[in-house]
Amino acid sequence: MFGLSEDFEYLEDTWVDVDELKEFINMYAHGNLDNLFEEKPYNKENGRNYKSDYKKFQSSPEQIADRASRNSARKELEKQGRVKKGDGNDVHHEDGNPRNNGKKNLKVVRKSKNRGDK
Image (tube, rainbow, N blue to C red; front, side, top):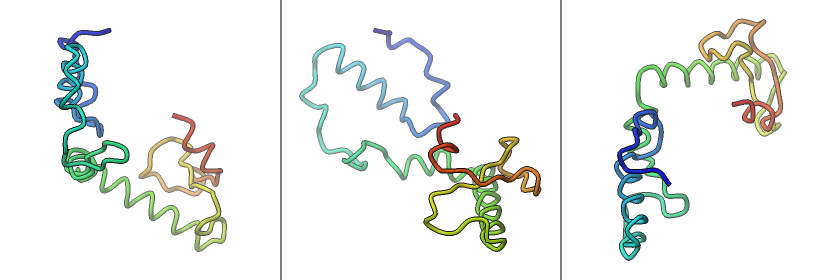
């Protein structure tokens, strides 16, 4: 098990609430699990605080521009008839840059393939 002094900076720009993670580790390490499931201001099904997630990451200007560009690429391929809503396909950016919507950079792939190549 790792200690609380471990550096969690790599999680700062993700959906993970670092302070909650440290609190959980501290509670777990000391066997103090009584307060673990107390009422929290987040989605009970999966534990994510979507407001915090949006505020920390998704609302940044870079992420908004990336999302808009991905949506634009999808819309363009829908106009071309290469994809349609509910077909189980994603628009893949070959170079990994969501703002590069050049014809040679866009490819239609199954969702399972596109979302699995992390």
